Image (cartoon, rainbow, N blue to C red; front, side, top):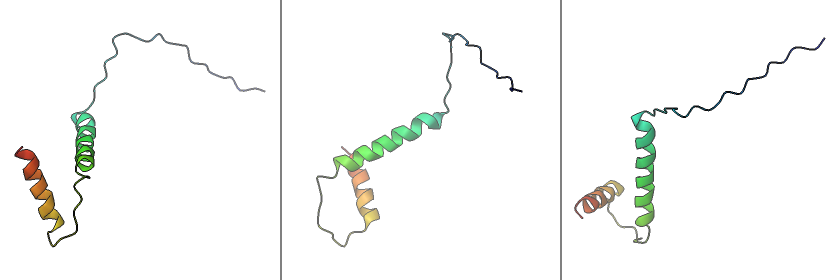
Length: 68
């Protein structure tokens, strides 16, 4: 005996579909894009390793970018 199959009835797409996103669904990709863009744009300024700490260099770059 075959099991009955259920088919979905096609529903017409409504023109007034509202999509709501939480704030972080837009903010997180934008922040990630900006961070990657900063990493790519600064790659041409490679320098030899010095005694400066990585955190100090990061803060220095942030201050430099904000004061432009």
